Amino acid sequence: DYPLAEGNAVSLPAGTNRISVRAFGWETAEDTVNIRAGTENRWTYPGRPAAFNLTVSRTFPRALASDDLKGFRFSWQASAPGTAAVRIVNSSGTVVAEGSLNINSAEGALFWRPGETDISAEAASSRKISAPAGLPEGVYRFVMEGTGRDNTNAGGEALFRLDERFNRSPRPAAYALPGLMYSPGSAMLPAGIWQAGTLVSARLGTGPLEIFQSVPVSAGFRVSPAARWETGSRFGISARYPLENSSLFFSVYGAWRINSAASPFTANLALMFLYEGVSGSWQQVPDGRGDAELPGLQLTVPMEYSLGQWSLSAAPSLHLFFLGNDSSRRSTALPARLAASLSGGVYLESGRFLAGASFKARSPDFQNSFMNWTLFSGLEGRFDFPEENSYIALSLGMNALNTPLIFIPSLEFGVIR
Image (cartoon, rainbow, N blue to C red):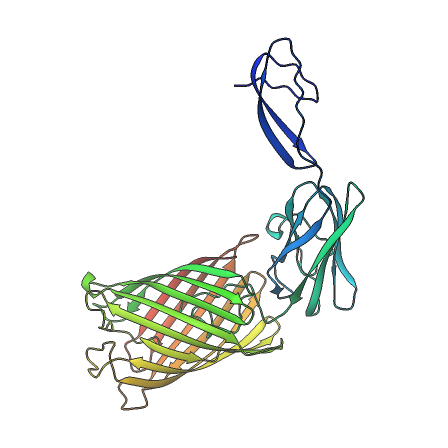
């Protein structure tokens, strides 16, 4: 509704006009002025240029593995325009990456992937990703040294780590290798990184009337709130026929990294609680569960030994089940029953792909053989989408040993940030 005119001295029609000023690089001000015909109005911008100051406000995440595909984000804040030189310095003082920055806004961010020699204003997902060069573990410094237009010098720095104990890779939820998502594993997320996924699977029986035993659908979340800590949960519904036999389930876990330093061998200590109950009768445990996941507590020590792209994993566990006294109609009730299990697996992780095979064997309960031996085995694969934060995972599991044979294909889609 207002005529547009630009410049330090402009001619405008009489009446109400709006003035907008941009000063000192990014400050803005707006005002409304009333102009009478044949008069000259002088408007003075009330601001003053601030003294130049430059700080590093945040580093995210604070630790990553040296082959991470997304890298670090360094956020900065400035009080006035200028220029800055930036660099990454290792613990011995050697510069491993550098770059420059024109400061024309009050805040911004720079990005760096381990192994790159340039520090970029573009995130890794928006530029071509090359194969990372190996850098040693340890503490690194991000350094900014800036100069304002008034020739004032200012800067800041932040510390971060390259640490192979923390891996941004997603870990799928479905009947997977010991210690993958929701059955917490040795590949712990960096602090502040989270993962969410949706899983659809089917339990296929071998009897003519039990081909489709159930269709579980679930969603899960996994996050590292602090270094060497991780927590996660999964919840969902398992549809059955008739529908009144459908069940709801959820699990929650917390894990702590045992290793205080990185090494080819890693181990966690984890505690998980799992519950599942038939809709309308929440204490009743669904029939036909031949797998090793039953309602109760599970204390696990997921371990992994890395051989480059190949890894061997194992997870001894103690289970405390609450299944009542009636083996034909199990329910979430006392007495508590103690059992043990052992998981093992081997997998190959190369670039955006993961493929592996695993097993999990659970013993009878130690009191009176209320439960039988159960063996689960499976194959799985995962693909990370190019230059994205999402992944897709497929798995095929099989239950056997003292239970009717059950096949469990699964599909999962998720994101990791």
